[in-house]
Amino acid sequence: MSLADTDASALWLSLRLAAITTALLVPLGTPLAWWLAGGRARWRVLIDALVSVPLVLPPTVLGFYLLVLLGPHGWIGAAVHALGLKALVFSFSGLVIGSMVYSLPFVVQPLRDAFESVGVRMLEAAATLRASPWDRFFSVSVPLAARGFVTAAVLTFAHTLGEFGVVLMIGGSIPGRTRTASIAIFDHAEALDYGAANRLSATLIVIALVLLVGLYAVTRSARGPTAMVRTWPWR
Amino acid sequence: MALALSLALARPGFTLQVQCEFAARGVTALFGRSGSGKTTLLRCIAGLERFARARVCFDDEVWQDESRFVPTHRRALGYVFQEASLFPHHDVRGNLEFGFRRLPRSQRKIQLDEAVSLLGLETLMQHRSEQLSGGERQRVAIARALLASPRLLLLDEPLSSLDETSKAEILPHLERLHDSLSIPMIYVSHALGEVMRVADQLILLDDGRVRAAGRLQELLTREDLPLAHLENAGAVLEGTIEAHDPAYHLSFVSIPGGRVALALKALPIGHRVRVRVDARDVSVALKPPELTSISNVLPATVLDLQPDRDPAQVTVRLALGNERLLARVTRRSADQLGLARGMPLYAQIKSVALID
Image 1: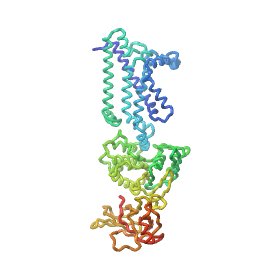
Image 2: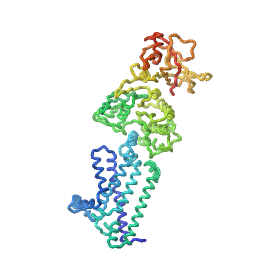
Image 3: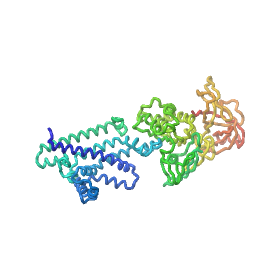
Image 4: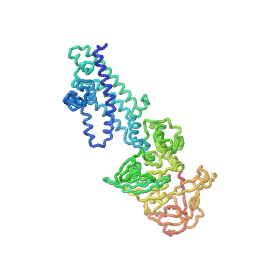
């Protein structure tokens, strides 16, 4: 079973999109998750809900508003235009932005839970041992929340890989630029080329399974974030 | 005076109004019932809690007042929590080095090996927190705090989550700290036994207020304080090992006003010890008793008599040299002997426990 060149490039585009989205979203979602885990702000409930909205909205709704926002008359689109940058809609950068919004809860929720489970006491202990707030974050919170980081990264990657509605709305289907694997499958099915659709779909299933098996193997091999850290290769 | 603290706090069902000073040397116990505000005070001293109406001064540094607040990691203190709170992602060595590594070499007052041997952790260095017993964990936590070279060590009921065996395992280490380090310690506890073993000074906290503060020996026997009226009330005396009698399996300790015998302890002559004499183990006689099985008889003077919780008993406070002793006798005996203030008599001590 081999993929046609166009399908291989669509798959490659999906993988790139997933990798870039993950690489950007995990560091950007971390402070937000940290803030939400702190749990003192009154705004927390609202922000918590906002972050989770992409979970329940149809991706087309999200994609529609992103299209409006990023388009030449939207706030962001106009700002980008004024700065003399390339338009975001129907571009790879636009897809990255859309994917980041769409996958936000997949980063924030596991990280928020992981930070919450680290608890206040560990940070207090570190503070009494001369660790500054930044130091505490990197030397206590991050290692103890390692499992949350792995979960966040894998879920974001897998979720972005399978994204369809948002991509369709803001990306169109430009080969090599915005035609991701899921769009290619849709095109094949519409053209009644079930063989091609099947080959690409099966490839996505295998990738998703490998990712999830890997994730569960890592996070289940040990109970609690501690043991997780211990089995980590870089420890 | 090493530390001055004032704190006013009002919460529904809980008010705290405290002003106290802590000695620059030795162990000061913050003693009181659960809910009396001990831990809150300690957390305020450490800067783990920031209260609006608080003032904390340590030596010449202001840690907190109306306008200033030094964050915890900039206060030169060590903190031992009720539960050891070791970092699960580090082994024992990693935990010990956590604070140690964060100090410039010039500020390190204690080396890793010293702390390790002081707390007896030699064989545990590669262990993870979950492989340790409760007592071991707490020993690691104490060593970890010491290795941050604190100028003040705060201990929040460090033994309360441990079983009796683990307590017995840690107490000698705490006493060793007391003897070998010059770091002032504040020890929060609601266990009188622990306080009698480790404290020099006592601050008695009751219902969010300081009820009394002073030397342990004095507060233990003060008639206006609840300590002298507890079922296990007693006096603590400082003494020196004077001689051993292996044949009778006894050691002799000189204390203010005399000398007492107790079960043989393998300690060098001249070693300073602390003994505990429970009020219920002390009786009194007007003349030196001749035919008695009680070997510890010391001349003393009656300071006063206080009604006991038990209506049949009274608590007699005795002056023994400069120190105080409590005796619990029946009211009937007290009347028959005509006990009164200033009367010389003999205290017969049935049992003396070496606190060690």
